[in-house]
Image (cartoon, rainbow, N blue to C red; front, side, top):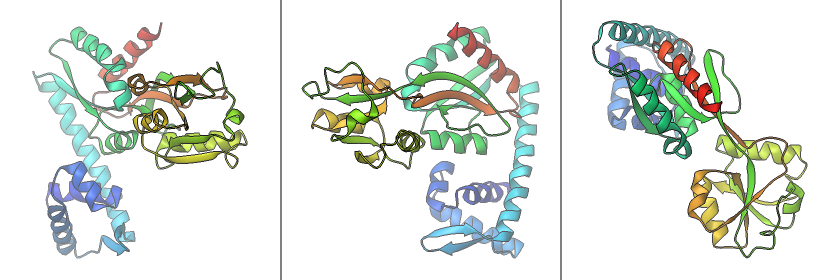
Length: 294
């Protein structure tokens, strides 16, 4: 049994999916399968069982996963603390950020922070989905996450950065294009395109529509992964899009109309685990975020 086997097991156990684990760990799927089979053979335990095309942890596997996750967390935190205390090299803070923010709001602030901490801190940026950010924070492959979240988890610190309101997008020649504001009920009779419920933002749309009493009344197609795909379809058709107001929409010839919804569609947070070894630098970064808002 070696450290790689334990890291592979921790990732596969968390995801219960070899393909996703192989992508996250940047190794081949056969390598992961062989590593787990060797681990099971060495321990003489069955850690996973097949369930259709998927795998699930056994009760024994779930018990071992908790032990391995705790042990790896202690090891990684200890190593990072020793390196941070003794290294003359800049500390690298790994940031997972959703694409709509990584090229606009974030770089200026991170550059300013690097200038204020010359030769102390550098940032490694990754443009990924909210789901990948949350998984990376949990696995400690990211130190800082910039993403939209619906709820706050214990053990994490959060700072709200941006709010993206509900809007409707239509083609310039659409009947609604001259409206200055819309109610969700104004969308009755329209073909409405929005995000797939597989995404957090898609789930937020569904909850809002239900609370407003229009979920079962709209001609709704909730099948799209982002604003780009929705905007492309709206620009080429008579459909309307129900989306968050993001930078992606600027590339399209569309009219944006505010929606009288009781809440913002998406709130972007900076977040990190409270026990992160770089807590002090991350705390200072949160303070800089606050200064930018004044």
